[in-house]
Length: 507
Ligand code: DUC
Ligand code: ZN
Ligand code: ZN
Image (cartoon, rainbow, N blue to C red):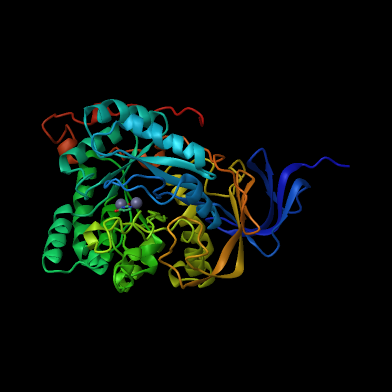
């Protein structure tokens, strides 16, 4: 008997990448892709992918898992349930959050979240560090040390009473990120406008979930983007603007990128497939469609698709923020909750890729001009992995981890609450039917979902340590106020940029 050449061969499928598609077998040995070609030699295990698309597992770079909200509410999902549901939807890498709240020690926060993930995750993961307490210890000790250890992205909120950072601490954070080469991700909405509108609406008795939409005025997004970009430009610090929801917001980003600023952007399925009208339901039912920022109008959806096709927005994440529709989650303030008391967030880890596959590949949205499959792979796996420097992830190429989703492009699936694997008990996309579904999902060559069943093991997911990479590198172009040649010699930035930190191998 001949000894198999590979641990695993995925045979007879069509491989999809961000730049093309071709018929090939994939050979996997020791968790990695080691061969891509026709008629590969035998594997100890073989998967028949005839008639299927063999794609990189999805990379979802924004999901809230086993996270405590600013209001003290724990997500519905554990790492085990969230990562299982991600895998059922074809995602094999997730970036979640270690969330510091006011008064919390950042180092301790990260230790706690690491323990939760290590216990439960069945796909690979990395953390963004939410900073709500930018005191001296956080900025001068903990954050630089944690970035150096491989946590090279930060998230800050410009709104929410309990976690927002104002303009001055935002600048402090941007500077710390610049000095240590981390990407700064931002929830950017104008806090004053949201707070003021909320009070005015409630005072007049407009308290139903649907009023959540006007309480986040669309202009509050463009204003905050503009202010944030001005701060980032002052420090020449790259930023990632999370969950873009409006046409005007996308326009602000396009202009900034046109001026050569390092501004990256993300949107989410809820802004591409839902509108504010989805929140308009009897009683509190609309809470199931409440997220922040809220879904907007059909015209915004069109603008976001255009921005994706043009490269102004580079990633599509789920912003999975799971709260059950009961007293443990959405209705924690009781049956008379106002929109202000209802937790913001939707489940979406499982539906992200199938919704996008259906729109971009099966229905072939026109913006992508026949390149829907390539754009789908690019926006949901390859580019997110590149921006966040998730080495070995997001592409089918030799040397990469064998994180693979085998899609049946003909399979039609009705999305229902009952079919989902997260713990919210509902999906805002229930009632839709999609064509194309991932039928076999592997992480580093191991089955995580196969034959419609979970095959992954809680705790088998691995943390991905990373430095900031190219995305977090400043452009090197100082604005006038920071340029000693144009600010009367005040050297505020130039001498403060150390070499990029060295990251230890995965722990
Ligand atoms: N912002 C997020 O990024 N996720 C959930 C809620 C929110 O406001
Ligand atoms: Zn946010
Ligand atoms: Zn989020």
